[in-house]
Each structure stands twice: as C-alpha cells, then as structure tokens.
Image 1: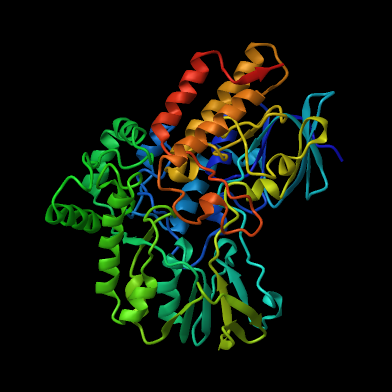
Image 2: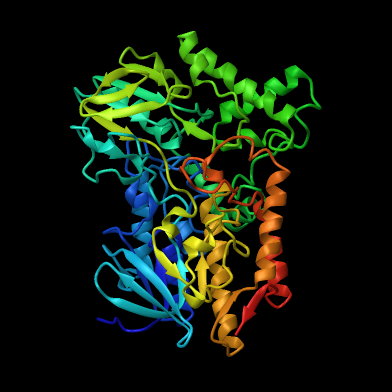
Length: 531
C-alpha cells in the first residue's frame, strides 16, 4: 500500500522531530513524522531508568523558538528528570497540535532515493510505502542502544535490562542481587537509586568515570522570573558559549597554570560547589593543554578519595585519563554509594567479563551470582540509529557503505550522493558537545531554509558537493586534533562499539560552527549543489 505523498518525511519525534514538523508545517509543507515509540519524546521516551535526568539546566534545555512557550512552561528543578522532560515534550506536541502529523509505533526500515522521480521512498514496519521530496533524519545521537556481545549473554535466567530501553512500568529491585555493567552517565545516575532497594548491587567497571556533583534543587521562583524577563538575551548569551549553555556564568579567562596552587584550588572548589558541567569552564586551557587538564583531574581524584571510605575502592573509581575526553558525568551521591555495605565494585579493566551464565557474571574464573542484570553500556552514538536503517542514495549506494571508514558529511547536515537527505545534529556538527536543544534548533532552521532555497531556485534537489564535504571532514579532524577530546577511548570516537571505525565524530565549538554556517548561507549556500 502506498501512503499519500508528502513534501517532507521526518524520522523520529524527539526534540528534533517535533521542531521539524512544526517548522515545516508553518512553511506550508506537507509533513509526516514516523516514530518507533508509542509516544513522542525520542531519547526521553525510552530512557526511563532510575535517576534519569538531564545534565544541562532545565531552563536552558528547552525550546527557545517560541516566546509564549518558554514564558508559560514551569520547570520545577535545576536539572529536570526524565518524567518532567517527557511531560514538556508532550506539552509541546499538544500546544502546537503536532500529533496529527506524527505516526507512532512505526519503525522506518528502509529509505531509497529514486533518481527518476527525485523523491525518497520510505518503507516502514506498518507495511506502507511513503514518498517525499525531502527526508529529515531526526533519529537522535544517543538512541541506538549498545548491547555488548558477551558470551552467554542470552543464557541468563533472570531479567536483563538496558538503561536505554527501560520498561515503562518500572522495575522493583527489592530483595534482589543486581549487577550493573558499565559506569557511564546512565550508571552514575542509576546506581545510587538501585543500591537503595537492592539486596546487593555489584558494579562491573571497565573504565572509571569523572563525575561532578549536580547539587540539584528546586528552582527559585525569583530566579525563574528573572530569567523569563530576559529570556532572549539569556539564550543569546548561551549561544556564544562552546557548549550552548551557561552564558550567564562567568567563564574562566586565564590558564590553569597561570595562577598559584592555592588560587587554582579555590577556583576549582567554587566550581565544585556550584556543580554541573561548568566545572570544565574554570580555565581557558583545560581541554587543550595536558598539564592544565591534569590539575583539574587531580582535583576530582582528591574529591573521590575524600568521599570513598575504602582506599582501594577509591583508587579503582579514580580515572587516570584526561578529564573531559569522555562525557563528564553529573552525579548525586554516586561515589558515596560505594560506602554502602550492600555495594561492591568489580574491576574488569584488566580481566574483562568472561561470560554470563544462567546465574550470574563470570570474571577471572569467579562467578558473581545475581538475580538481575542491568546493561548501562550506552549507545552506538551518532551513527548507530542511521546504520540500522537501510538508506540508499544515488545509484543505490548505501549510507552504511559510504560511512564504512567513518562518517563523512558537509556541516554534519548532508552527505554527498544523498540528495534532499538531512541529518539533524549529524556527525561533523557540534551535537553532543553542546546543549542538544540549541544544536537542534540551529540545524532544523538551516534545513528549513535549504528546503525554501530549493523552491526559490525552482530546483528539484540539494546535496553536499563532494569537494566541500572532503574539506569539511578535514576541518573537523583538524579542530579535534587541537584539543584533548581524543585523549582516551570514548563513544565520541565510536570506541565503545567493536568494529566501529575510530573517528572523532562531533565538532568542538558551537559559536564558530554557527558562524561558518552563516557564512555558507551568505555566500549563496556555498558547498551545496542545487539541481
């Protein structure tokens, strides 16, 4: 069966999908979003694990495109929980009447570009074949769960969970022995809460995480009122920061090595007391100078040593890598949870997990018996959701093959050979190194302008020029090489997925990226080819 033709098909109904539907419809385009979940929300629909919340302040992790929306919505906490963010996205869908343009509980399986009709043919799990001039992949950077292929994984007799696909009815761990495999962001958030209920919790750690305190608290009504009174300037300031948030905060203006030890320690202490990811904004050179970076790393390690009672456990929880080369975590009581009698840590860095048996997890010949297993092993980031769809461009070339040696793109937005296909916050854009909502709004607005430009030029398609794409990939690699982001094996590099090419995927620096995009537009969309 063929669905009626659309101007735009959007894959996904999270922040990016909702805004794309809204903006496309406001410009008179026939648009349909297709979403695998049975509700809107994207990553916030699926990630319902205990303690799930955002690490960007809620007043900034929200849409800024509509003044009435940002004025009317009331956030309750500094860092919003998953349920509150999902309520917000449901509110956005209802407020702008977006649901009539969204098809839920339907997974896109393949997308094929027809060079004769210059339209995309989209096949989905509901058996329908849809066509559209433009295809917008709003699939999210952290939406394809990574499940490690451990021998015997499927033989475990008890329940197995993944933090990125948590049961919507919740999980009761009372009187259970629980294993958590992984110590990334979702583990840091969930471990303290699981430990409160489990009979015993065993954490299997390959690489320790740097975590800074959230100091989460209810929002001060006076502070909220002050922000809302000046929201446009507040957001404009955020867009001038490398991370897309915290523009109101005082950023460090000097090197960590240019001050005395006492002054440096006092500055770090103030940042620690403030809480949140702004810790790495204490000095100008923490992500470019290894010696400066080590001063921040040593400070956090000293905090871990002070919080964890057992010296051996504290040492195991203390990373030795560059701080910030992996996504830094924002925690509530993570480290002190290891002081509990019912929590134990198993280091699997030198002796990896051998197998999972019907009754537990085997490490170095020892069976750790458990009743339930939680995989907190993150995602096949940035490219995983796209790789799982059969996407074919000109002459049947697959996106999967085009990216076999690592993802290539122009501005993280388009790929040569795939006309009228747009990747929102794709590899080669700031995406996961920023406030995602800021990155999404900028990308969606640029896509809408490109679609308008196709019509203005009376063209049928737009795609990245191969030479421009090659130049952009070189630029992204150059910028990354000037930083310490490549100082460890991280999901930024795809290092958490066996067999995935090791390529640094995001681009550091949002304001510079936005300036380049503005220059591209001012130059007549330089680097794009209109047919």
